[in-house]
Length: 373
Image 1 (tube, rainbow, N blue to C red):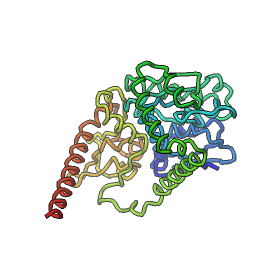
Image 2: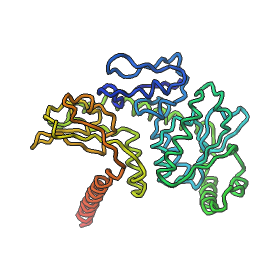
Image 3: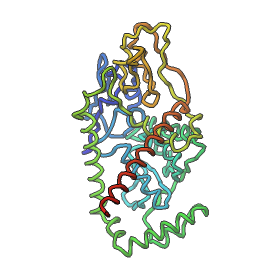
Image 4: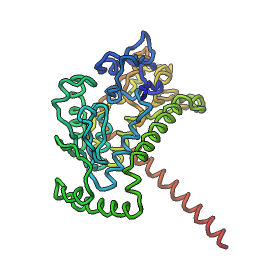
């Protein structure tokens, strides 16, 4: 049984924000918000695992699958030279033998705009394969399920200039030669040829038989569940959670923020199309009390050790407003900006990474020469 869990570390309510998106989005009323700043509570007897809460908030996860696992699965399809098809369980019938490039989700609305943005920034060819009529009377996700995912895709398309195709047809398992002679798009032929060579190599080595076997598919599913459980346990039980530099909070990069940064890092040109909310301080009213720093759930805010005034790292700021609610002097506000604000920091991080890699290679080369002598 897949279990929906709340990852407290990613819930901004506990830091004092007014966020209630999860409660509003849940089509079955399975999520409730206790009084005060407590994390959401899930009624597992009511929850049917549609995953819509995944798409609106970082604080929800499953012991079966994480967004990292989903991203990795879609990338595996793309690197094999094939188009990735995404569909939902409502569109899968008992006699349908889906192909290996089809990803089946409880509901497509569990995919947040940030992940769609990252996939499109990576130039991954995507198709939604479903009949939207099933969304109208879907018992699993309700009407909201059919409303959220088209909007999330639209947002990502506007940001990247890319597009997601739509099809009523869900690819089924085919014989090898049929699979690569039935390409919908002539421009896909080179990718198809690459995929054909890959499959021929797998057949020769026996890997294809293993990859398509039910035993191995079950193994992969169990492996993904194990990874998901391990990640969820790590986020809550890290032994180093309380060890942070004096005057600073622990830095926590929320999953959707990480996806957004990865997308912008890959394609700088889309940054201007992505609106973001960034915490700012009006120093005319700021007394340096530090309540905003203590409230920040990501560690984006810290006190400058020399001036004693708060500063903000936009890379970690998710614009939740917890700092604004905590400031008694009303000196904090959320400013509208674009993802261009990340570019300087991303470039700096990239240079530092390249420098560290060069030093490592130089060290390895030195050790190699020393060993040779």
